[in-house]
Amino acid sequence: RPYDQLVRELITVDGLWTDSPAANFLTVTIDQNGDNQPDETRLAGRITRAFLGVRIDCLQCHDDKLDQIVLGDSDQTRTGLQSDFHQLAAYFGSVENSLTGIQDKPAKEYHVKYLDEEQEKRVEPAVPFYPQLLSKQDSKREELALWLTDDKNRAFSRATVNRIWAIMLGQPLVKPIDSIPLHGPFPPGLEILADDFSEHGFDLARLIRIISSLQVFQLESRADFPLTEDHEAHWAVFPLTRLRPEQVAGSIIQACTLTTIDANAHIFRQLLRYFNQNDFIRRYGDLGDDEFRDRGGTITQRLLMLNGTLVKERTKDNPIANASSRILMATNDNSKAVETAYLTIFSRLPSKRELKHFQQRLQQSTGRKRSNAMNDLFWILLNSTMTDFAGAPRGASSAARLKDVASGVSQEIVPAVAARSRVRRFQ
Image 1 (tube, rainbow, N blue to C red):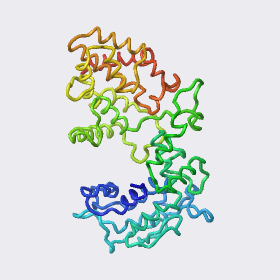
Image 2: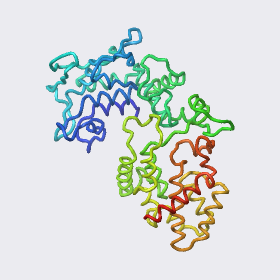
Image 3: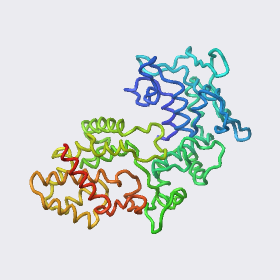
């Protein structure tokens, strides 16, 4: 379905989440310790950041005093006001959660106490820009949804293109991803893609095909010259970006399972992945709505990878579930076993040095020790720097940027082997 239809469904959905999964977009804002109702202010912040690329959360408490939030039309711009935020939140003022799920209750109103007033007042719904695109509808949520996804609402097209670009290349065209200037300036590529997206009925598949056909998407993350942040900022190379927590968890689970885990997988495998992934993300650090912010790794994250339950369970003897055990069962050829492990985790073959090193370790072991050596190989590869980044599989990065992870043995693999030996002694 076209993307605008999907977004409208998220905003206007009624009923229980079990029958209408889109209702989760509204129910996720419910405070379980409160009145068990959707939070209008959280919803206002979510839709502007996710669908318009505009961050107006700070207007919830006060007017913009620093001229950082520019609203209004292009011919009459103005700074954001506290009323802008709450008038937008008022579109969800009639939403109620009951035994029958999400529904509109027309008699329900939205009230707020403004900073410069002593008492609460009823707030009428209004949009912060392009009011001429509004059309009268039976439901306030429907009015908002149609305004937001109107093909003349350029903010919607730009925000979607910027987000899809970030998903595919790891970084958005405009940073931060939820702070796109309403009236520019914009990168030329963003405007061209936004025009095409709206002109072709908000077709996500077409947008993805176009981006994937661009030269910038097909670049490698390595170069024959020293790389700087400017090279990535101007898309001279494919940017190296840290994987998001859910990507790290998904990569570990999939790499250690030879069977593809997707919507067609057995329900047991899907449920197991769901619970394992959620627990890992909670401990690793859920980025929430800031999934594309620039960030570095933390000591806690590294310790979780070294000693956490997910990696430990996925790198132990288990001929039914774990790839390390199943690979050894499938072949007695140590070279093929090492190559399969690298292909499973890195989607590349090992270098000659890496192959020789791990081949020798397998050859020196038999029986249970050989199984331990294969489990160690998986543990070491999962804990290498290369698994932290998107973009690395396209080509080995420079030594300064990725610590020579592709060379393996001397720079990272040998210390990892030693670390694995120390960890094993305490298990």
